[in-house]
Image (tube, rainbow, N blue to C red; front, side):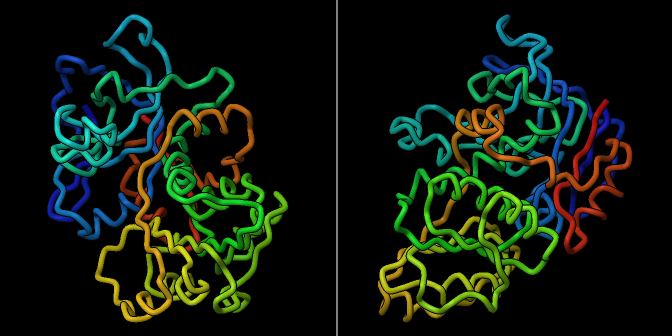
Length: 317
């Protein structure tokens, strides 16, 4: 089968990849669409030593699996848990000590004709959600994880730093809480997407120091972290949503003096994400920059790496 294969930080389109065979408890999924995200780009740059098929944001059709899922469109949670470690036993499978991660850690991903995932990882896509929209389920769930970790109320002053793909989703989901939200970025056209939904936006220079209770860093660069940090009041909370390819330098003393809570935030609830897409409470269509066939996957990656580009999708059929 065809797939985008990463090895030694080099990406290539291969046509000789063996067809995957589902093991006990797994389903075989024919991939329809998949999205290129910043994690894929960071893996290509060497964020984590990975060899195999990239991709973890996808929509597909079940071709082998339980009867109730056959021929159904599905999305899939990316962490494949062992089921018996202490995190699995305590209901935290995303932190399984033995997990593999679709397209990221020891598990071939979605930039291919087919993939395999445990049936328990799969979620049917509501009929009224278009395939290209459903492709955003995984990153939207990741955005929603913030609300699983931090209580957001109407009186909270919240800052989102970053107007890219993830920042757009984080901003839309946080706006639903009714908090006092400001989103800052560098691109007026991207900020306009949020302003059209009634979300207050601005530039980095609009951020007042020590004016926010919670800040969310979605840029993955040191400058974004610095903005998010200086915006916080004492005893504020800084949520990190981005992976960093390099090391991040920070003033640890200021975190201690101001008693700042630092939270890493990763994967989130798929059911809630699908509900928001089905009810159109979140609009992802303006985030789609382009769609390429899998055979043009290298060109798609080249585009996705350009500054200012939002979501680039791959179409498998």
